[in-house]
Image (cartoon, rainbow, N blue to C red; front, side, top):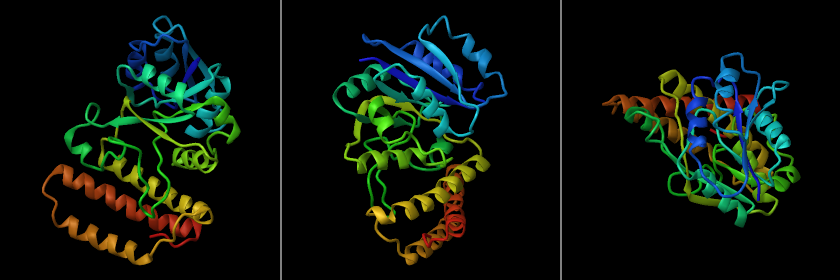
Amino acid sequence: MHLSVVIPCYNAADTIAAQLEALVSQRWTKPWEVIISDNGSNDELPAVVERFKEKLPNLRVVDSSDRRGAAHARNVGALAAIGEALAFCDADDEVAPGWVAAIGAALSEHDFVASRFDIEKLNTTWVQKSHANPQRDGLNQYRYPPYLPHAGGSGLGVKRALHQTIGGFDESMPILEDTDYCWRIQLAGTELHFVPNAVIHVRYPDTFCGIFRQARGYAEHNVLLYKRYRTLGMPKLSWRKGVAAWARLLRRLLRIRSKGDLAACVWQLGWRIGRLQGCIKHRVLAL
C-alpha cells in the first residue's frame, strides 16, 4: 500500500522545518510520499521546503491558493496524492518517531484512523493547562451534547477512496472541518479507530490572545455543528446548562492562582463568548 502524507500550509515557515525534519527520520518498508499543500503563503515557506527536497526525495508541493482554508488545502493535497491511503498532519505540529509506520500499518487494517496527541513536548506547562488534551488516551468524546467521537485533523488517516466518496473536507467550514469530516464518515457507516502508537506532538497557542481566539472560534463553530446535526441524531441542549457554565466560569475567575489558571479561564471565557456569537450568527439556542 502506498501512503500519501498531506500537510496543509499557510505562512508556516517558522514551524514547517521541525515537521519535515521529523518526517525525514521516519522509516517504513512500503512506499510513501509527503505533499505540502501551499494555501497561498507569502512568507519564506517555499524556500524552507526546498531545503528538504534532498532529504525527502518523496516530497512534493502543490498549489492550493485558489481558496483559503485548511479544508481546501487538504482536499487539493488529497487530489494530487498517488497513495491508496492518506495521512494528514499539520505544519505547526511534529510527528513522533514511528508515526508513518504506525499510521500506515493501521490503514492496512482499517479505512479510517486517528493518532494519539501529546501536548507536553511543544508546549510550556502553563500553556498545557489552558485546556485538556482530549485525544491522549482515546478518541475525542463529544459530550455537549453527547454525540459521535471525533479526532483532530492532524493525525487523521483515511483510505483515499473513502475520502473521495464522502466528498472530502467541507470547504465552507474554516474551523472544526475535521469534526464534521469524522462525523460524516461515521454516519456513512465507517468506524473511526484510535491508534495509540501513532503519536502527534501538538502545538497549542502560546499567548493569551491566541488561546482566546482559538477557543472562541471552536465554540462558534460548535454551535454550527449543533445546528447541522440536530436532524441527524444529536440530542437537544438545555439552555440551563449554558447559564450554569457561565456561573462556573465566574467562580473559577475568583480562584486564579497561577498563569496556568489564568490560561484556563481565558480559554473558558473565549469558549462561552464564542457560543454566544454562534447562537446569534446561526440563529439557534445552544449556550
